[in-house]
Image (cartoon, rainbow, N blue to C red; front, side):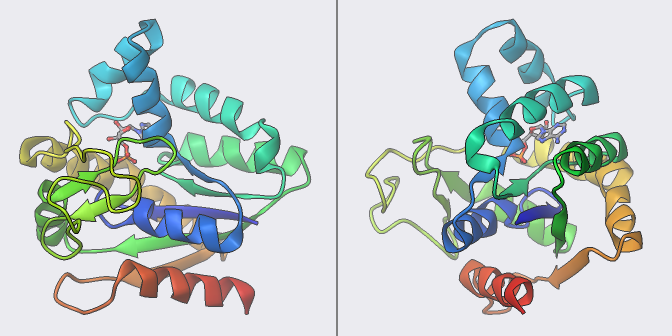
Length: 220
Ligand code: AMP
């Protein structure tokens, strides 16, 4: 089962994707995580990626596609995956279609998480992330704080604030989202694959509720 998580940065693609991956027993593949792991290695590719991520810009299609294609060829994704953050452009969406079609696979649903920009900014600047690659739990200081300040509930690792989770970079990421990435919503709508979940910070809907709603839709 291949599920695509669409939506602007900060709408909860990662948190919901993580939950869905556990519930549906397929890997959660986050393009942002993959790119950050290259940045950490400090090689040439990492330096190139960092020069886009740290300014809130998209990694160029050819590089993004090459690295995600590589990940999608690994054996653990044979039965499906939750794709979080990829595709983000039309060329990426088209390449993904071809890649899956060539392997007799298809996308089950493209979930679009929608939240107003002002609420996104407030969510992102209070977001904290577990850097442990085996855990990657995501917290929010306002509505989902860790039990012990600064420490991951699940694995005890010290939480971090991603370097691109600051107001200035978020505004640039949102600008790019509306200019480029939002277009792929129509691409999936036209294929009758789109499922939109409207969120807002004042409702009591938790990421668990959202994951449950998507799971029910998928297993219907
Ligand atoms: P995310 O963790 O999904 O918020 O992604 C963090 C950053 O990684 C983005 O702001 C982009 O710079 C880069 N990125 C992630 N996914 C993609 C993609 N599919 N195409 C291009 N750049 C991406």
